[in-house]
Length: 617
Image 1 (cartoon, rainbow, N blue to C red):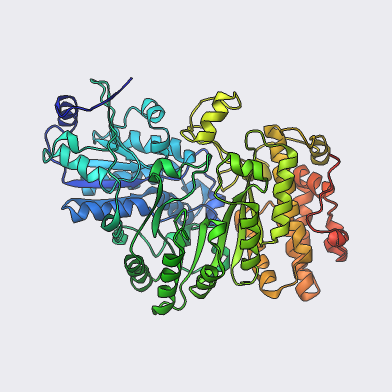
Image 2 (cartoon, rainbow, N blue to C red):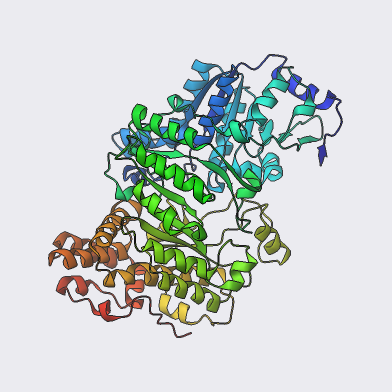
């Protein structure tokens, strides 16, 4: 049961925090970023390839600076970086113990810093178990725990039930809510000032303080405490963003957030849960100041924008990019991994993007079917997508990708084919296809629960299909069984007017991935785009998924197209892959590919119209 505190009496909350902190004022705060996943999912061989993500703990660094500005002593420990660094530094597999690595680093920081309270973040559902282990480790040492982040905000009641060691949850953005909470703990203010806080009080009913304390205007113009993060070494231990393959391996990457929120209200997205409605913008000058600090003090030469709606204000976007061009940061490049909205990709905006160092973007299209776009409240139309693509194709130095999603409620195979056809017509550089992953506290999740399409089990065990920890990666590695043994037969059985099952969606995903991405390579002739494809496929075959037979095959094709020959070691690598994987042999058969294509440099499928659908349905 939950209780919303509306009165100005303070006894339940005051008694709880006084008992929790034993009347000792909070002076030192430790902020913790847990490993992205737990030991059961972590593979050292993947870490050695540099495949796992290793983002700066941007939100914690913003919080750290905000707290320091108010007189608190603050430190940050990034346990994800710790485990990646340890995995790569030990001499052998026997010398590496995932849990020992992060526990030792945490214990050392706790002993040396001696915090009065520990704040622990959790961004992703995949991090839930790892997050729980870190919470328990801190709680076992008798230190109060405050939890926050996107994952907690999306599913706070269930998470507090499952992890009772969390004492207090801070929801949404914490720059105002956390300092206010600490001031209350220190008897400096009353509880009527509290907001976005849930107290997990065992001796009282759970206490909710729902007042919104959202940072605005000057509150957003804060430089993260980069000195508390190993900024120069993060990208040497893992990846940041989706486009690291286009930069030299020794490039130092960072992330920057120029505005918060999104104009859209997509039913599958949780951005509004965390950031609220609309978009709040930092001043352009503060963003440029941050870029200059990263560039001059930390050697950063590439940034990934964390914005969910980077181009919301066209005039501001052009001003920002123009100012980047004017400053003395000539070799600084950037990407928009999180995606941009197609209608904002105007000629003026894209030209400014290219001039300021943009090397890659993702466009959030999701569906090419108008009915689905309306049902999920996507801020875009097919016309928007086609117009944006027409402009982006003029700027070849920008690698432009599409976010596509399948598996929406009521979506038939015919509707999915609409998505394929629009994506084909847009003819951009890559399509990032994913299956819908309904997150708790989003409209599509609630609707699917009501319709009986999914069970209301929360996000604890939600596993994404893509990414280094995703299901598809484990299937390609042979560590999980493919859902269908005969791909061609399974796919042809799907009726065009029917809604595919979850298992069938996996096959459709594979079908789309081949036709929209790999088969298209046969017909690319632009030198800049061929170079981008070579870099992308090299990363796919060497870093992202060495088991991916398509990546190896099309590396061979591009090598022959550009040099007239194919490295024998590449042919041998494909031979081994097909001989040792029924999964990949079946898919090569389904799409008419073979090892002999590389051996004889005869590519039978080259004359097939790229993207042409060969489906019996």
